[in-house]
Image (cartoon, rainbow over all chains, first blue to last red; front, side, top):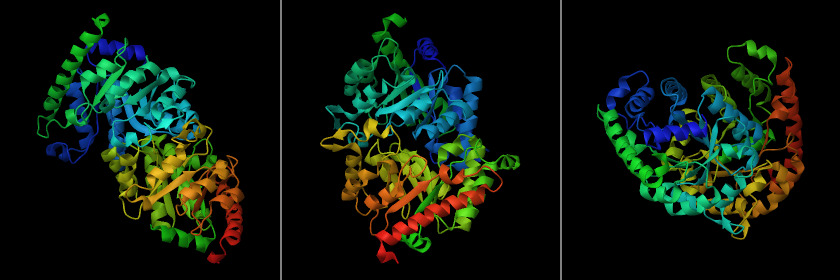
Length: 277
Length: 277
């Protein structure tokens, strides 16, 4: 998918919501556990109920790998379902991968070709030759960790490296990489006040923003500092939506939560981006 | 497996060789492609031929994920084969994972419980709460990237952070984490001269050292600067061993390469560690 197609979808749906499909069998409704593939059945119900309210889905691979082969099969069924039923939706494999050159190419093939995701998240620690293999795939997107939403972000990411914070070095350095136009970045909503500085370095890039809701981030602040004239934001919510209820009507409860966020996003879009109306 | 059991194995085999099982279907002998599970058949043959020469095997998960469900099944069969036939051997899932707390716990379950590896590699960028969930598993080992063997290591890892290089900050900071005794570190052989400094920070820890051979690292230098009185080194070789030949006798060719390395390691052990004899 091209970035322009993503932007068109945002304009049409008045939403830049990404729903995290982080399926924990201990948290899903009990009646699904009797089905053959509870993870996929859960995802399918969530997707069917929310696809008109969001522009992206983001399964975190950890939640699938934890269930071994069955988990990987559920991931494959989920991405196939999305690509068949809702090809307009942007898909993110939240995998946080990264390895030396030829090995990163294998990861890129896993997520871009075998599973046919539109994008994958990667970690920056190993530098340019660990990320460029992902960037080489046309119309695929590589979403690199910059400033994450967890407490550990302050261990290294915000430490000063040669005059500026590490996450800013990561942003600036990566702008020079080949096919940098295929980069997006993860910036946690819990650090919305950092977004103004971040936008000085990467004014045009899309940001994937976790941490709104459950982790305490604030949608208005993220938009105030992070929105740009292509919108440039994907706001992720996982637990706050998919675990809104663990009763039989969990999908409708999820849709209500997603709609609330979508409505808030519409207000922000109208406020910041008159040009989109 | 406890660290002491690993050390005992090293003493017994006079080897601290780790063999990387990075299976690329384009590189393995053609006759294996006709079998039902070429990846596993390749690994099984390599393991059968080399298990007395090495103390660890390290499948890099990228090479399995690239083949989807079949790849994941081959990884599962490989670790099960190792745990059944050679329970004394240390197993490393080279996965370079890392995510926020509860998600890292899912990854830890995937590799320590579902697949029953002895250890997993992780990335440090997200800090303490992304790594401690792995450290909480008893008699399991978490091998954190410190200074990698690729060119991109110079993009961020060697940059100066508050007076010292980032990789040194990573080493020092991680020493304070809960269950830090379960940490090992990745340090590339191509940067052997850095090992003396690294040993000042973490004198007792085990280091997983890639980059000997194919990437130009030198065994003698790694031992000179990196060995400690518990040996403290696992030297990895992947391509140099497993792709020694692509003919029918590939397993014996691999064993010859492994034996050469093991013999060189025996010399180093005898030289540095008279106490082991």
